[in-house]
Amino acid sequence: MKEFMLIFRNSTNSHENPSPEQLQERMNWLAGIAAQNKLADKGNRLSASDAKTVKPDMVTDGPYTEIKEFISGYMIVKAANIEEAVAFAQANPVLKAGGNVEVRAILRPEEKS
Image (cartoon, rainbow, N blue to C red; front, side, top):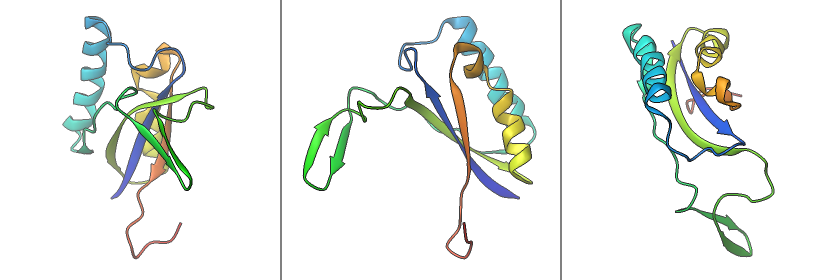
């Protein structure tokens, strides 16, 4: 079983609080993954206001301003392969709100990209 990070992005307003219905839908989605014993880390939401971007010659406030999508959160799932991890992502309610989910394998020191 490999671990995959699901990175949640949104371009509309990624940090507004979800409605009670949206929150329930997300919790149901998460519970479905947990029920399969495939949840490695439920992750967290990420702040847009309490953030800094560090470059070699400067530090700026907030996440990168030149991107149109903001990372709003993440989680880690266990899956047999990337196709299974993608299936988890495809069922995520964030897609209904105009967001997207990036899926990346987590590499251990002994693994190669």
